[in-house]
Image 1 (cartoon, rainbow, N blue to C red):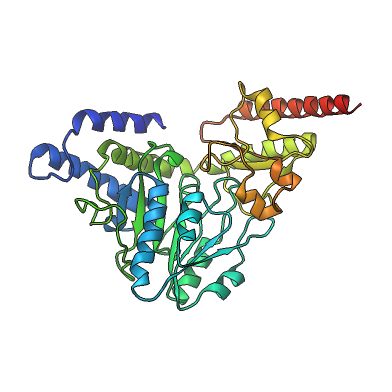
Image 2 (spheres, rainbow, N blue to C red):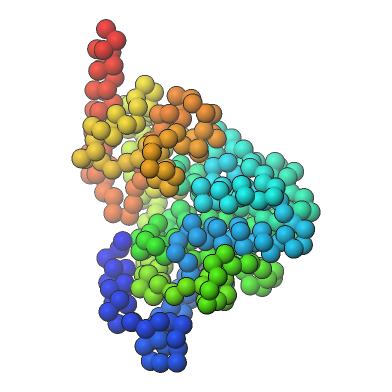
Length: 372
Protein backbone atom coordinates (compact mmCIF):
# COMPACT_ATOMS: atom_id res chain seq x y z
CA UNK A 1 0.00 0.00 0.00
CA UNK A 2 1.23 3.46 -0.84
CA UNK A 3 2.44 5.46 2.16
CA UNK A 4 0.06 8.30 1.32
CA UNK A 5 -2.85 5.88 1.25
CA UNK A 6 -1.84 4.46 4.62
CA UNK A 7 -1.87 7.98 6.07
CA UNK A 8 -5.43 8.51 4.84
CA UNK A 9 -6.62 5.14 6.14
CA UNK A 10 -5.12 5.82 9.58
CA UNK A 11 -6.69 9.29 9.61
CA UNK A 12 -10.10 7.81 8.81
CA UNK A 13 -9.76 5.14 11.51
CA UNK A 14 -8.96 7.81 14.09
CA UNK A 15 -11.20 10.66 13.01
CA UNK A 16 -14.27 8.99 11.47
CA UNK A 17 -15.75 6.64 14.08
CA UNK A 18 -19.36 7.11 12.97
CA UNK A 19 -21.46 4.86 10.75
CA UNK A 20 -21.76 6.63 7.36
CA UNK A 21 -25.35 5.42 7.09
CA UNK A 22 -26.29 7.29 10.27
CA UNK A 23 -26.25 10.85 8.95
CA UNK A 24 -28.50 12.22 11.68
CA UNK A 25 -25.53 12.90 13.95
CA UNK A 26 -22.25 14.71 13.38
CA UNK A 27 -19.96 11.65 13.41
CA UNK A 28 -22.12 9.75 10.95
CA UNK A 29 -22.41 12.78 8.68
CA UNK A 30 -18.64 13.24 8.67
CA UNK A 31 -18.10 9.61 7.72
CA UNK A 32 -20.78 9.84 5.01
CA UNK A 33 -19.10 12.92 3.57
CA UNK A 34 -15.76 11.09 3.38
CA UNK A 35 -17.41 8.12 1.66
CA UNK A 36 -19.09 10.34 -0.92
CA UNK A 37 -15.82 12.17 -1.60
CA UNK A 38 -14.16 8.82 -2.27
CA UNK A 39 -17.08 7.81 -4.50
CA UNK A 40 -16.50 10.91 -6.62
CA UNK A 41 -12.79 10.10 -6.96
CA UNK A 42 -13.45 6.51 -8.06
CA UNK A 43 -16.12 7.61 -10.53
CA UNK A 44 -13.93 10.33 -12.01
CA UNK A 45 -11.08 7.86 -12.46
CA UNK A 46 -13.09 5.64 -14.82
CA UNK A 47 -15.32 8.20 -16.54
CA UNK A 48 -18.45 7.36 -14.53
CA UNK A 49 -20.93 9.26 -12.37
CA UNK A 50 -20.72 8.97 -8.56
CA UNK A 51 -24.21 7.42 -8.52
CA UNK A 52 -22.82 4.53 -10.62
CA UNK A 53 -20.35 3.41 -7.92
CA UNK A 54 -21.23 0.71 -5.37
CA UNK A 55 -18.66 0.01 -2.67
CA UNK A 56 -17.97 -3.66 -1.92
CA UNK A 57 -15.27 -5.79 -0.29
CA UNK A 58 -13.23 -6.31 -3.45
CA UNK A 59 -13.35 -7.54 -7.03
CA UNK A 60 -14.50 -11.05 -6.10
CA UNK A 61 -17.66 -9.65 -4.53
CA UNK A 62 -18.06 -7.13 -7.37
CA UNK A 63 -17.82 -9.92 -9.96
CA UNK A 64 -20.39 -12.02 -8.13
CA UNK A 65 -22.77 -9.09 -7.69
CA UNK A 66 -22.47 -8.12 -11.36
CA UNK A 67 -22.95 -11.66 -12.69
CA UNK A 68 -25.50 -13.06 -10.26
CA UNK A 69 -27.33 -9.77 -9.88
CA UNK A 70 -27.63 -9.23 -13.64
CA UNK A 71 -28.65 -12.82 -14.30
CA UNK A 72 -31.43 -12.71 -11.69
CA UNK A 73 -32.78 -9.46 -13.14
CA UNK A 74 -32.39 -10.51 -16.79
CA UNK A 75 -33.96 -13.94 -16.21
CA UNK A 76 -37.29 -12.20 -15.70
CA UNK A 77 -37.03 -11.11 -19.36
CA UNK A 78 -36.21 -14.61 -20.55
CA UNK A 79 -32.49 -13.90 -20.85
CA UNK A 80 -30.62 -16.76 -19.16
CA UNK A 81 -27.44 -17.19 -21.20
CA UNK A 82 -24.06 -15.97 -19.90
CA UNK A 83 -20.97 -15.70 -22.08
CA UNK A 84 -17.43 -15.52 -20.73
CA UNK A 85 -13.84 -16.45 -21.61
CA UNK A 86 -11.78 -19.47 -20.52
CA UNK A 87 -9.01 -17.33 -19.00
CA UNK A 88 -11.24 -15.42 -16.59
CA UNK A 89 -10.64 -15.22 -12.83
CA UNK A 90 -12.30 -17.98 -10.74
CA UNK A 91 -14.64 -15.37 -9.24
CA UNK A 92 -16.12 -15.01 -12.73
CA UNK A 93 -15.94 -18.59 -13.97
CA UNK A 94 -17.59 -20.07 -10.87
CA UNK A 95 -20.78 -17.95 -10.79
CA UNK A 96 -21.06 -18.13 -14.59
CA UNK A 97 -21.00 -21.94 -14.41
CA UNK A 98 -24.08 -21.85 -12.16
CA UNK A 99 -26.18 -20.19 -14.89
CA UNK A 100 -28.91 -22.04 -16.79
CA UNK A 101 -26.74 -21.77 -19.89
CA UNK A 102 -23.12 -20.66 -19.94
CA UNK A 103 -20.82 -20.29 -22.92
CA UNK A 104 -17.07 -20.28 -22.23
CA UNK A 105 -15.14 -18.96 -25.21
CA UNK A 106 -11.70 -20.30 -26.07
CA UNK A 107 -8.63 -18.10 -26.60
CA UNK A 108 -5.74 -18.26 -29.04
CA UNK A 109 -2.13 -19.00 -28.04
CA UNK A 110 -1.66 -15.38 -27.07
CA UNK A 111 -4.62 -15.57 -24.70
CA UNK A 112 -6.95 -13.34 -26.74
CA UNK A 113 -10.63 -13.89 -27.43
CA UNK A 114 -11.96 -13.98 -30.99
CA UNK A 115 -14.59 -11.28 -31.60
CA UNK A 116 -16.19 -13.27 -34.40
CA UNK A 117 -16.65 -16.26 -32.11
CA UNK A 118 -18.16 -14.00 -29.47
CA UNK A 119 -20.67 -12.47 -31.88
CA UNK A 120 -21.75 -15.93 -33.06
CA UNK A 121 -22.69 -16.89 -29.50
CA UNK A 122 -24.78 -13.79 -28.71
CA UNK A 123 -28.51 -14.51 -29.02
CA UNK A 124 -31.74 -12.92 -27.88
CA UNK A 125 -31.44 -15.05 -24.72
CA UNK A 126 -28.04 -13.63 -23.73
CA UNK A 127 -28.17 -11.82 -20.41
CA UNK A 128 -24.55 -10.79 -20.03
CA UNK A 129 -21.10 -10.99 -21.60
CA UNK A 130 -18.24 -10.85 -19.08
CA UNK A 131 -14.60 -10.49 -20.13
CA UNK A 132 -11.72 -9.09 -18.09
CA UNK A 133 -9.78 -6.11 -19.36
CA UNK A 134 -6.39 -7.66 -18.65
CA UNK A 135 -5.44 -11.10 -17.40
CA UNK A 136 -4.17 -11.47 -13.86
CA UNK A 137 -1.53 -14.08 -14.80
CA UNK A 138 -0.21 -12.99 -18.19
CA UNK A 139 -1.19 -9.32 -18.34
CA UNK A 140 -2.70 -9.93 -21.80
CA UNK A 141 -5.26 -7.27 -22.68
CA UNK A 142 -8.56 -8.00 -24.40
CA UNK A 143 -10.16 -5.59 -26.93
CA UNK A 144 -12.60 -4.23 -24.36
CA UNK A 145 -13.90 -1.29 -26.39
CA UNK A 146 -14.63 -3.52 -29.38
CA UNK A 147 -16.43 -6.02 -27.12
CA UNK A 148 -18.42 -3.21 -25.53
CA UNK A 149 -19.53 -1.86 -28.90
CA UNK A 150 -20.47 -5.36 -30.04
CA UNK A 151 -22.63 -5.88 -26.95
CA UNK A 152 -24.31 -2.50 -27.41
CA UNK A 153 -25.17 -3.39 -31.03
CA UNK A 154 -26.92 -6.53 -29.80
CA UNK A 155 -28.56 -4.95 -26.74
CA UNK A 156 -26.60 -7.16 -24.34
CA UNK A 157 -25.07 -6.13 -21.01
CA UNK A 158 -21.28 -6.11 -20.84
CA UNK A 159 -19.30 -6.64 -17.62
CA UNK A 160 -15.54 -6.39 -17.33
CA UNK A 161 -13.13 -6.95 -14.46
CA UNK A 162 -10.84 -3.91 -14.43
CA UNK A 163 -8.82 -5.08 -11.43
CA UNK A 164 -5.50 -5.58 -13.22
CA UNK A 165 -5.82 -2.73 -15.70
CA UNK A 166 -6.79 0.13 -13.43
CA UNK A 167 -3.34 0.83 -11.92
CA UNK A 168 -1.51 0.79 -15.25
CA UNK A 169 -3.93 1.89 -17.95
CA UNK A 170 -6.63 4.41 -18.80
CA UNK A 171 -10.29 3.43 -19.10
CA UNK A 172 -13.49 5.32 -19.86
CA UNK A 173 -16.44 3.07 -19.13
CA UNK A 174 -18.92 5.11 -21.15
CA UNK A 175 -16.74 5.41 -24.23
CA UNK A 176 -15.93 1.70 -24.02
CA UNK A 177 -19.56 0.57 -23.86
CA UNK A 178 -19.14 -0.99 -20.43
CA UNK A 179 -22.27 -1.47 -18.30
CA UNK A 180 -20.70 -3.16 -15.26
CA UNK A 181 -17.09 -3.11 -14.05
CA UNK A 182 -15.24 -4.51 -11.04
CA UNK A 183 -12.44 -2.76 -9.15
CA UNK A 184 -10.19 -3.79 -6.26
CA UNK A 185 -8.16 -1.55 -3.97
CA UNK A 186 -5.06 -3.63 -3.36
CA UNK A 187 -4.12 -3.95 -7.05
CA UNK A 188 -3.74 -0.18 -7.29
CA UNK A 189 -1.71 0.41 -4.12
CA UNK A 190 -4.80 0.78 -1.94
CA UNK A 191 -6.07 -1.31 0.98
CA UNK A 192 -7.00 -4.97 0.80
CA UNK A 193 -10.62 -5.86 1.47
CA UNK A 194 -12.23 -2.95 -0.37
CA UNK A 195 -13.36 -2.45 -3.95
CA UNK A 196 -16.18 -1.13 -6.08
CA UNK A 197 -18.66 -2.16 -8.73
CA UNK A 198 -19.49 0.28 -11.49
CA UNK A 199 -23.15 -0.16 -12.40
CA UNK A 200 -24.44 2.15 -15.12
CA UNK A 201 -27.59 3.92 -13.93
CA UNK A 202 -28.68 5.56 -17.18
CA UNK A 203 -28.60 5.00 -20.96
CA UNK A 204 -29.25 2.18 -20.22
CA UNK A 205 -30.24 1.81 -16.58
CA UNK A 206 -28.73 -1.52 -15.51
CA UNK A 207 -30.94 -3.48 -13.16
CA UNK A 208 -29.29 -5.76 -10.62
CA UNK A 209 -30.75 -7.85 -7.85
CA UNK A 210 -28.69 -7.86 -4.63
CA UNK A 211 -26.94 -11.01 -3.46
CA UNK A 212 -26.45 -9.72 0.10
CA UNK A 213 -29.68 -8.86 1.90
CA UNK A 214 -30.09 -6.69 4.95
CA UNK A 215 -30.37 -2.97 5.54
CA UNK A 216 -30.37 -1.97 1.88
CA UNK A 217 -27.13 0.01 1.88
CA UNK A 218 -25.49 1.23 -1.34
CA UNK A 219 -28.72 1.93 -3.22
CA UNK A 220 -30.10 -1.38 -2.05
CA UNK A 221 -27.41 -3.35 -3.90
CA UNK A 222 -24.99 -4.17 -1.09
CA UNK A 223 -26.22 -4.39 2.48
CA UNK A 224 -23.74 -4.03 5.33
CA UNK A 225 -22.00 -1.28 7.26
CA UNK A 226 -19.56 0.47 4.96
CA UNK A 227 -15.82 0.09 5.50
CA UNK A 228 -15.13 3.81 5.86
CA UNK A 229 -11.31 3.64 6.28
CA UNK A 230 -11.00 1.23 3.36
CA UNK A 231 -13.21 3.37 1.14
CA UNK A 232 -11.21 6.49 2.05
CA UNK A 233 -8.06 4.52 1.18
CA UNK A 234 -9.53 3.52 -2.18
CA UNK A 235 -10.27 7.15 -2.94
CA UNK A 236 -6.71 8.09 -1.95
CA UNK A 237 -5.35 5.41 -4.30
CA UNK A 238 -7.31 7.00 -7.16
CA UNK A 239 -5.83 10.37 -6.20
CA UNK A 240 -2.33 8.95 -6.68
CA UNK A 241 -3.20 6.97 -9.82
CA UNK A 242 -3.26 9.87 -12.25
CA UNK A 243 0.37 10.83 -11.65
CA UNK A 244 1.50 7.22 -11.61
CA UNK A 245 -0.01 6.46 -15.00
CA UNK A 246 2.54 8.82 -16.51
CA UNK A 247 5.36 6.46 -15.54
CA UNK A 248 3.72 3.17 -16.55
CA UNK A 249 5.92 3.12 -19.65
CA UNK A 250 9.03 3.07 -17.47
CA UNK A 251 7.79 -0.11 -15.78
CA UNK A 252 7.23 -1.62 -19.21
CA UNK A 253 10.83 -0.83 -20.10
CA UNK A 254 12.10 -2.63 -17.01
CA UNK A 255 9.84 -5.60 -17.74
CA UNK A 256 11.13 -5.77 -21.29
CA UNK A 257 14.74 -5.74 -20.06
CA UNK A 258 14.11 -8.65 -17.70
CA UNK A 259 12.17 -10.51 -20.38
CA UNK A 260 15.00 -10.06 -22.88
CA UNK A 261 17.54 -11.40 -20.37
CA UNK A 262 15.48 -14.50 -19.60
CA UNK A 263 14.78 -15.23 -23.27
CA UNK A 264 18.40 -14.79 -24.39
CA UNK A 265 20.23 -16.37 -21.44
CA UNK A 266 17.73 -18.91 -20.09
CA UNK A 267 15.77 -19.85 -23.21
CA UNK A 268 12.51 -18.61 -21.72
CA UNK A 269 9.25 -18.63 -23.67
CA UNK A 270 7.07 -15.58 -23.00
CA UNK A 271 3.44 -16.57 -22.45
CA UNK A 272 1.20 -14.07 -24.20
CA UNK A 273 4.25 -12.18 -25.42
CA UNK A 274 2.78 -11.49 -28.85
CA UNK A 275 -0.33 -9.74 -27.50
CA UNK A 276 -0.83 -6.28 -25.98
CA UNK A 277 0.03 -6.62 -22.29
CA UNK A 278 0.09 -4.62 -19.11
CA UNK A 279 3.56 -3.14 -18.49
CA UNK A 280 4.04 -4.80 -15.09
CA UNK A 281 3.34 -8.43 -16.01
CA UNK A 282 5.77 -11.13 -17.14
CA UNK A 283 4.74 -14.77 -17.48
CA UNK A 284 7.34 -17.21 -18.83
CA UNK A 285 8.03 -20.91 -19.19
CA UNK A 286 11.62 -22.15 -19.20
CA UNK A 287 12.08 -25.52 -20.91
CA UNK A 288 13.28 -28.35 -18.64
CA UNK A 289 13.02 -26.17 -15.52
CA UNK A 290 10.26 -26.67 -12.94
CA UNK A 291 9.00 -23.42 -11.37
CA UNK A 292 8.98 -24.96 -7.88
CA UNK A 293 12.67 -25.78 -8.21
CA UNK A 294 13.35 -22.12 -9.00
CA UNK A 295 11.18 -20.97 -6.12
CA UNK A 296 13.01 -23.20 -3.62
CA UNK A 297 16.39 -21.84 -4.72
CA UNK A 298 15.33 -18.20 -4.82
CA UNK A 299 12.63 -17.90 -2.14
CA UNK A 300 14.81 -15.70 0.07
CA UNK A 301 15.70 -13.34 -2.77
CA UNK A 302 12.75 -13.06 -5.18
CA UNK A 303 9.01 -13.30 -4.59
CA UNK A 304 7.22 -14.88 -7.55
CA UNK A 305 4.45 -17.34 -8.26
CA UNK A 306 4.08 -20.57 -10.23
CA UNK A 307 0.28 -20.52 -10.26
CA UNK A 308 -2.66 -18.27 -9.53
CA UNK A 309 -2.80 -17.09 -5.91
CA UNK A 310 -6.56 -16.71 -6.26
CA UNK A 311 -7.48 -20.35 -6.83
CA UNK A 312 -6.46 -22.86 -4.16
CA UNK A 313 -3.91 -23.45 -1.44
CA UNK A 314 -2.36 -26.27 -3.48
CA UNK A 315 -0.15 -25.63 -6.49
CA UNK A 316 -1.94 -26.62 -9.68
CA UNK A 317 -1.37 -25.91 -13.34
CA UNK A 318 -2.83 -22.57 -14.36
CA UNK A 319 -6.20 -22.77 -16.10
CA UNK A 320 -5.14 -19.65 -18.00
CA UNK A 321 -2.08 -21.37 -19.49
CA UNK A 322 -4.11 -24.54 -20.09
CA UNK A 323 -6.56 -22.51 -22.17
CA UNK A 324 -3.66 -21.07 -24.18
CA UNK A 325 -1.37 -24.08 -24.62
CA UNK A 326 -3.31 -27.17 -23.58
CA UNK A 327 -3.69 -29.33 -20.49
CA UNK A 328 -0.57 -31.05 -19.21
CA UNK A 329 1.84 -29.51 -21.73
CA UNK A 330 5.41 -28.73 -20.75
CA UNK A 331 4.80 -25.04 -21.36
CA UNK A 332 1.77 -25.03 -19.06
CA UNK A 333 3.52 -27.00 -16.31
CA UNK A 334 6.62 -24.85 -16.49
CA UNK A 335 4.98 -21.43 -16.31
CA UNK A 336 5.69 -18.86 -13.62
CA UNK A 337 5.00 -15.17 -13.33
CA UNK A 338 6.88 -12.12 -12.15
CA UNK A 339 5.21 -8.85 -11.25
CA UNK A 340 6.81 -5.42 -11.33
CA UNK A 341 5.51 -2.27 -9.69
CA UNK A 342 6.06 1.45 -9.43
CA UNK A 343 8.72 0.86 -6.78
CA UNK A 344 10.75 -1.58 -8.87
CA UNK A 345 14.26 -0.35 -9.72
CA UNK A 346 16.61 -1.17 -12.58
CA UNK A 347 19.08 -2.54 -10.04
CA UNK A 348 16.46 -4.98 -8.76
CA UNK A 349 15.69 -6.07 -12.32
CA UNK A 350 19.37 -6.68 -13.08
CA UNK A 351 19.86 -8.63 -9.85
CA UNK A 352 16.71 -10.69 -10.43
CA UNK A 353 17.83 -11.51 -13.96
CA UNK A 354 21.24 -12.62 -12.72
CA UNK A 355 19.73 -14.79 -9.98
CA UNK A 356 17.19 -16.42 -12.27
CA UNK A 357 19.68 -17.17 -15.04
CA UNK A 358 22.17 -18.57 -12.53
CA UNK A 359 19.51 -20.75 -10.87
CA UNK A 360 18.32 -22.07 -14.25
CA UNK A 361 21.89 -23.01 -15.15
CA UNK A 362 22.40 -24.83 -11.84
CA UNK A 363 19.13 -26.76 -12.20
CA UNK A 364 20.01 -27.87 -15.71
CA UNK A 365 23.50 -28.96 -14.65
CA UNK A 366 22.02 -30.95 -11.78
CA UNK A 367 19.60 -32.66 -14.17
CA UNK A 368 22.45 -33.59 -16.52
CA UNK A 369 24.47 -34.90 -13.61
CA UNK A 370 21.66 -37.10 -12.33
CA UNK A 371 20.98 -38.41 -15.84
CA UNK A 372 24.63 -39.40 -16.21
